[in-house]
Length: 91
Ligand SMILES: [Zn+2]
Image 1 (cartoon, rainbow, N blue to C red):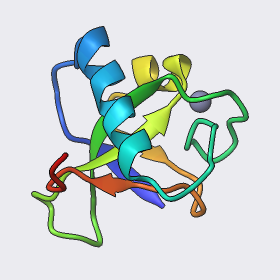
Image 2: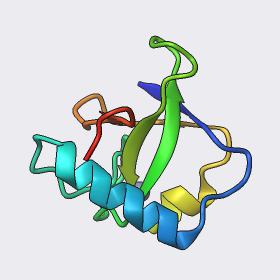
Image 3: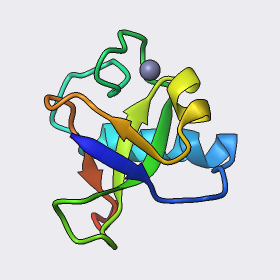
């Protein structure tokens, strides 16, 4: 599925780490890899995205490797098996 970057500005390194912790807390998957469709690297960052089949304003966290999170500008195709976590959940 295609996701869009929710921020035109890049998130800080610290906030990407925090979002990855958030993702790990809520995901029910043992999925240690970057969510990009063809990527086999381990995820290191959590990034905020929107997904067009849901409400455009709903934000989701997707786990990505550093390379993909740093090069992610507008949109990205992620693996259909990857888990995306909505941000409205509370810790
Ligand atoms: Zn990747």
